[in-house]
Length: 186
Image (cartoon, rainbow, N blue to C red; front, side, top):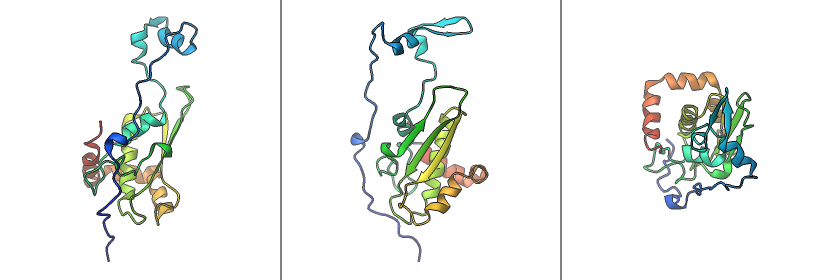
């Protein structure tokens, strides 16, 4: 007997999903952050305040959530954020702000059902999205949340094995499905 498709998943209202509020920097001359942003120096060139905004900043869990929450679920016409497959609380970013050090992003996903046959595909879609959007210094770890899937260990191994991920990304059919999933990303 084949797996039952979860025809009635819990759906969150898109307007209630976590969003970054407009953060305004205090333009206080004593503010160390403000001083760093207004005058960055590289090879003798000085960048102004507006040019500093274009420089790569550190990443936080909200930015990672923003990148992956709009990925479409392969079974439903909903996003991973709406289905609560990805949650802000389950994303951890370790970024030392030193561009020479490896940074790490850990994303724990929660399949809609414990025997979800597409958990690996969803995790692969998240990994591909992050690899395309993040600088190469980021190590990406995509895991199933503890106790959320009956084949948790096996799926985690597949999602974090570089050779398996590379082979999967060479498969034209899988790439077509992943491209379809990522088509809704903002």
